[in-house]
Image (cartoon, rainbow, N blue to C red):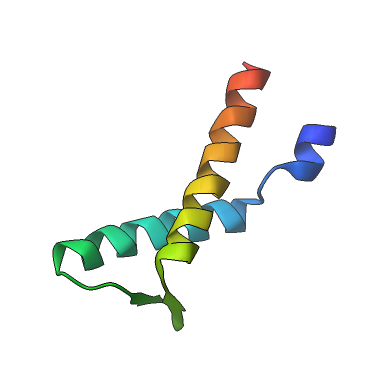
Length: 64
């Protein structure tokens, strides 16, 4: 129950994945920032997206 409350939502996970994919593509083009769904994404946002996905992986490992 507690894990469900503190786990990222499906929408948050999808957005985090989108952010990381966009950042990777931008990096290949030499860009420092990119827009995702009309919002500017910078390195701080990329780090947050990594934490969101990392926390989900951590929770999955504990449950398994």
